[in-house]
Image 1 (cartoon, rainbow, N blue to C red):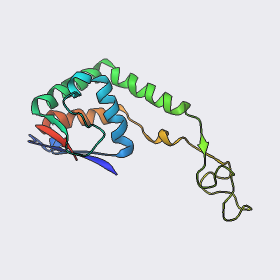
Image 2 (image 1 turned 120 degrees about the horizontal axis):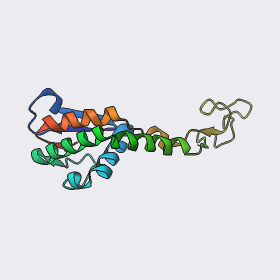
Image 3 (image 1 turned 90 degrees about the vertical axis):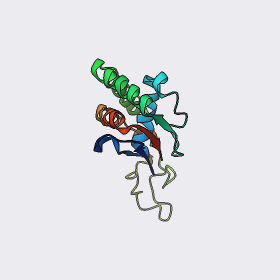
Image 4 (image 1 turned 180 degrees about the vertical axis):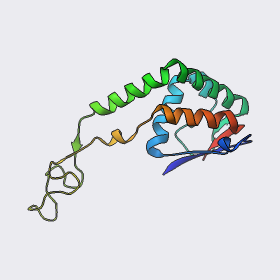
Length: 150
């Protein structure tokens, strides 16, 4: 699953479509709403694909704000802090072997999911965001003429 973001009145190819899988969209939307609360307020459903979005003027304002945050280093700092938070998450018990390290169907064979350790990386570590994601989204916003998240 992912989010497809369609430009309402694109002025270039960059403004026609922006998409991310759920692992990429969720943290990008969180970054955008946390760093740009005023510019994102008109869109209430950033984590839903029900068609909410921003109009052309609001999209342009958000693009300009994101570009400023990219230039100032605020986006880089956010991404660095986000990655550090994820890295600190403790490993979780493997769901496939229920933390035993061995196959449920044959306890003499190590679990392939966790390599026999009984632990796997925390689920939330899959939700990453970086500066390139923000640059691509800002380029989309500049040229989309408003958007809908579908």
